[in-house]
Length: 311
Image 1 (cartoon, rainbow, N blue to C red):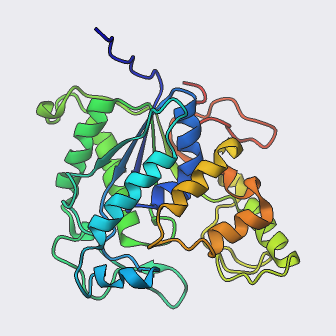
Image 2 (tube, rainbow, N blue to C red; image 1 turned 120 degrees about the vertical axis):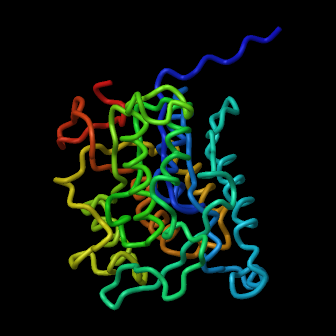
Image 3 (cartoon, one colour; image 1 turned 30 degrees about the vertical axis):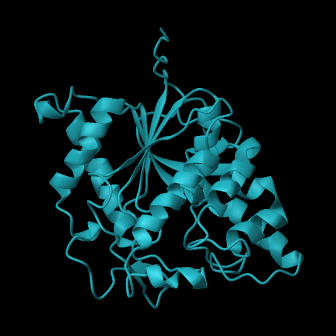
C-alpha cells in the first residue's frame, strides 16, 4: 500500500483574475517553489471570457460571437500548469474561485491616461459585480483547507486598473482576514491566519534596463510606456519592493507557460521581445511588495530573496 505524499511544510497561495495572469506575474517563482518541494496553490477568479483573441481562426470564440473563449482558456491554463510542473511531476494545485464559470470576466477599456477602467457594458455575472462577502467565502474555504503561510495577489489598483484585478485584490485581502477569525463560518474549516501577504510588482530598475537594451538593439518599444527614461506606470520603484525572487533557472518554464496562451500572448509580442534582448534577467527575477508580516533576512539591495523568509 502506497503511503500518501507528505504535505509540503511551506505553502504558497496565489489569487489571480484570469488565465495567463499567473504565468506573466509569477510563473518562474511558482516553478521554482514546486521544484524545491514547496506547495503552490493557484486560484483563478474568472475564465477570461472577455479577452482579446490574437488567433484569427479562433475569433469565432469571442464574446461578441459564440462566447466560448472561457472554455478555450480553461484548456490553455491547463497546459500552462503542465509547463510549470516540477521535474518529479508535482504540479500546481489549481482552483477556480467558486468553481469554473462561477464568475465571468468583467472586461475593461482603456482610459485616456493609459490605465484600465470598467467597460461600459458589464455582464450580470461579472466578477466586478460579485458580492464581496460571498466571493470571499469561496476563498476562505480554500485558505482553511490549504493553510498557506504566504499569499500573493495584486495591489489595491490591480497593478494597472483592471476591474477584475482590483476585485481579486479585495477578495484575497478580505478572505485572508475572515479565514483567521475562529468564530467565522466554522463550517468552512478551522481558522487559519496567513503569516505574510505580498502584492505583485515589476521592478522599475529592471524594466528600465530591459527597455534600454531593446532600444540599443533597434527594437521598436510599444509597451510599459516605451521610453526607458520616461514614466513607467506599471512598474514599482525598487525602494518599495520587499522581495525579489531569483528564479532565473526556471525562465524557460515561464516562457513555455506563456506560449500556452496563444489567444492572449503573441510569441512576437513584448514579453518574448524583452526576453530575447535581455535574456533570463528580464523575467527570471520576480518582485513583490509586502502587505502583511515582518520582513525576513534581506540581501545587499534590502530585498528578501524568498517569500518565506523569516518563517
